[in-house]
Image (cartoon, rainbow over all chains, first blue to last red; front, side, top):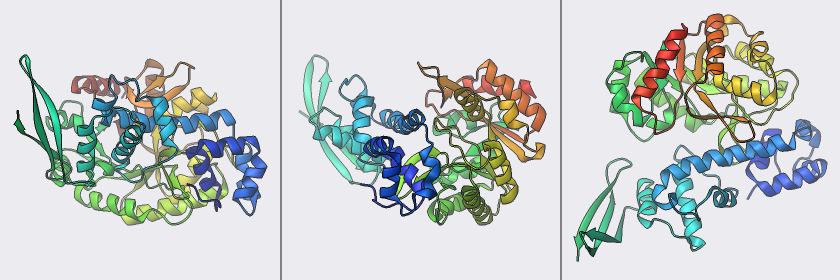
Amino acid sequence: MHCTEASSETELLAILLSDARQRASFLGNRRAWLAQKLQDPGTAGHLLDLDAVQLESQAATLVGKRWRAVSELIPESSLGNSSLTAALFREYADQYWPEGHRRHELDAVSFLRFCRGLGLRISTAELARLEISLGQRSFSLLPVRLQCGRRRKFGILLLIRGSGRNCRELLLSHI
Amino acid sequence: MIGIGWRSNLAAWIRGRPAGLECLEIIPDHFMDGGTKVLEQLTADYPLCLHGLSCSLATPGPLDGEYASSMQRIARICKPRWASEHIAFTRAGGIDLGHLNPVPPTHANLKILVEHARELQERLELPLLLENITSSLRMEGDMPENEFIAELCRQAECGLLLDVTNLFINSRNHGFDPRDWLAPLPRAMVRQLHVVGYAQDASGKLHDSHDQLMQPDLLELIAYVIRNFEPEAVILERDDSAAAGNEIAAELEALHALH
């Protein structure tokens, strides 16, 4: 959620670039939107002249860069999975803007949880690896299916935090 | 000097001291959670420069002390010749947009940028270069963008890191002549270049995807800038994990051929 009162033109631009509903409201009636956000709308006069197409394009660029970074972090979940698309990411992206130098990993974890919440198939191992790397959990035990020749076996995969950001993986047993 | 931005997928190739690679640009974000030994080795092997992504110099209010401190810590380890940051904001009003956005070229924004650039320069105790960005959004202000940038560098006592690809993309997308844009810039202001091929979408718009080979029309502009401004360093900015050493080597060779 964005604060209802901004103090500068730059803050207002950040709101417009990060929230499609706010953009629609702004483009519907720029002066009314500015009057809602600022005590003195005259201080944000340059926003009145913004090109609507350019504004949408810049907003799309920001989300597109996020999607590109996130999709590289979740290949097991996204490759060959027609449900996890750029369009679905756009649907998710307005709700959460991760912060800091590990924002892409935070974004990837948040997006995978969003997808799981919709009942979509994701790689639980990939989600666990990211959570461990971010320090959000220290280990994870996951059932895995293994193909041994013609036979299919089941095993337990232990994911555990190693040194630094590393996530170590051990196959504990198979039956 | 001609070099590349350090990326982990190219680390082994860089360690091999390939021909044509004369310097490296370090992004602090890659070393915020460790990697001190790697940095020390790079410092021993190459001249370095430090390139910040997230100081958000154009955001009103105090400078982002946390990011500046990280830059300071990394600068102490890698002893760069200079540091650089963008003429942009990445954060405002509690929202971290994560990427670079323009502000209108106004006197008010000039004041904010000058103050933040001076403060960062003082904290780092290094010369600071400021970089032009590319943006779909063209914002009008109190002066043309090139005059705004020149005035900013002059008042903040900074050099310009001219991203030639960003200039090329903006000139095509927004319809202006990049050579006219360059005309008012003092020759000594441009100290470093960023270059990389541009991407083009179905609508014909150009983008800075940082994953393309440099195209002939872009190389022409790079050659023009090198001839006219004689920058101290040219950095190839390839971010795609698929970029192989031999491909980068060929790009570096193309840049050497322009000198």
